[in-house]
Image (cartoon, rainbow, N blue to C red; front, side):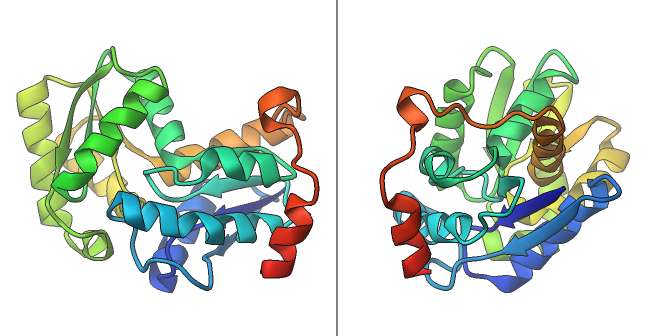
Length: 234
């Protein structure tokens, strides 16, 4: 099985870290290729950044027609619907995967994201994915995306505060840059901690193994000439 992980920002170090997190949980025989766009924002920390990231995401998806499935490795899930129109296989966003996974592990969960300005978008995704009843709160560790992988103490403190204030059973790390912190936070706090990169990788594997892909009826029907045009841009 071949999975392409698309990091919507242009920071290679973040792509490599997300790739490691995906490969750590991938089944034997699953090949994970981690890529990032040639142009776009260095980090996705605003609606403006997310909008700028989408063309690069779509170009990378179109450039991997032989992939069996795709992981969109940004917690804002930028361009997810459009990627599903373009992709040859199923596409799973890490926010979507993490939030649904958390609902299977306890009565309620809290999300810890990066900057306070990301709280609103995260709350919006919680509602969109039908997880509002289970979400006890969304909090920020107040660390920028590109610094968060090296800010374990700040992430841990925010997670501990979320557990104390929200009474949640499960924690969700709201950034691909936090992926490699999940196991340590879980061990320290004694609760399940969901990393969206790992969750999305396993969901994609499961969908592909079942022979399932995005429906081509109505909303996600192919757009004539779109994949060809994106491939040329890439």
